[in-house]
Length: 245
Image (tube, rainbow, N blue to C red):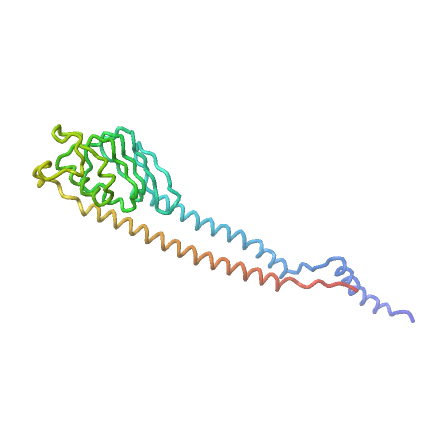
């Protein structure tokens, strides 16, 4: 018995649909296309946000970084909060402004006669100091350096010799007495307020850095979580492949 023409027409779309399913392993439905677009946008957005965090960190590092004093040369010691400063053989007559994070300082073979009172107090990270071969003038102004080196490094103090006045020439700084220096009651007091404000700025910078690091870690975890959820949604939205047996 021949099939009715109406039934033949009704079966034709189904047959065409089955042939389309057999020719294409997966149907690109609107849900599939939207999921594919989200999957492509997630990595781009993740990269942009990570670049923004990195740029913010680099900007903060640039703000907090201290310049190398001229004409000295500086280098990183390969550890956090460590800088080496080489000011040796530069003909310096005065102590330059030094980075607060200096760990190694070379000032030997210059023309330094004294160190201003309080000039070394801010170098809390200092571990190595070279001051030999300088024409130290041993009067009341050398007392600060002598007392500071007694607490910092006795061997470094033992290497220093007076160059003037003539009566104290070649005498070790560590052997100076009150009779050698005379009355030293006219020394200017250390400007404690200046050191207070510098310490306050450093503490504020450290707090801001810690807050930014904590925010970056929290933000990164959130991005990873969002990316994982996006991939899971993509897997759920991909339709199964229909095949004609």
